[in-house]
Amino acid sequence: MVRMRRLRAGSNLRSLVRETAVTINDLVYPVFIKEGKDIKEPVASMPGIYQYSCDRFGWELERIVNAGIKAILVFGIPKHKDETGSEAYNEHGVTQNIIREIKKKVPDIIVIADVCLCEYTSHGHCGIISGNEILNDETLEPLAKMSVSLARAGADIIAPSDMMDGRVAYIRKALDITGFKNTPIMSYSAKFASGYYSPFRDAAQSAPSFGDRKTYQMDPANGREAVRECENDIAEGADIIMVKPALAYLDVIKKVSECTNYPVAAYNVSGEYSMVKAAALNGWIDEKRIVMENLVSIKRAGAGIIITYHAIDAARWIKEE
Ligand code: PBG
Ligand code: ZN
Image (cartoon, rainbow, N blue to C red; front, top):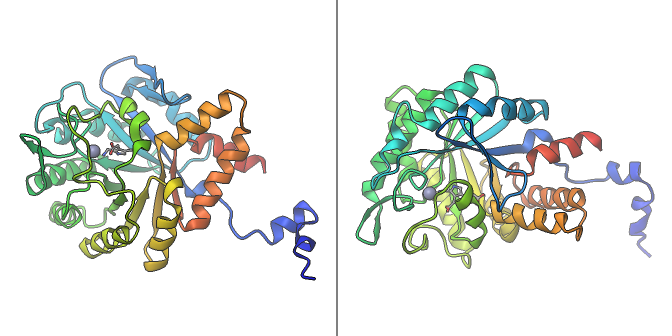
């Protein structure tokens, strides 16, 4: 008999043969910054997550740093939205302001700036529109302007999440010619048109006012196409590729991580978070066990970087181990 149970006999032995461990270094915490003053507004569909104005974010930043988190993903929510999302590249826009503020207070925290127009457009789509169509090529220039403006504000990594074709090459070129040759691009390469984003759209106030995102985000049924998306982004100059969402797409994370030697990030998205929180608040599951099991599964699938709203709790649980 092969006695598999021999190596499960005690906790020290189990940790000796454990194949995967999530560390605090792997975690990225997303934050929502709303233009205005004195705002700490709970996101109803995401218990524990708040929108902060710049002036109230200091405490939260301290909590993040004290937890040992080394990287954050910043989403700005502007007051003024228009048809073309022009606030996205305002040098004194909400996102630019908070990035400068964060880098002034905590220079070594890695600030990853999400690049997309949907928080800034009046119609909530990720690009420039004409009628009901979301235009690809016309969207590249505003994305590049936004990227340069966020890099200038101090962003360490530029993360385009719009899913327009050709945007990585376009942004790379714009960064290179404006003095940001060394700013890496983390591309949301395999981003699926997912029902798991709906709590985020409350948090970022970015729901599309007509139609859906299926003409630019990927069909959840397509795993092979996800590899092509990643290959294209790498060819265009991406430094890190991302699969999003994470848990329903572990096979995609696995496949992508096996076909490239680039760092792979996975985004454990809002809906994945909200489902866990809802069940935990009802006492139906053990939150710590479920979260740590989800995170280790994402890492086991092949993601070395995990973007998650659970990051602060997970950091505490990792330290307790
Ligand atoms: C915007 C964007 C979305 C997310 C990250 N950037 C939402 C969307 O595409 O509608 C989703 C994050 C989450 O659900 O946690 N381009
Ligand atoms: Zn978007």
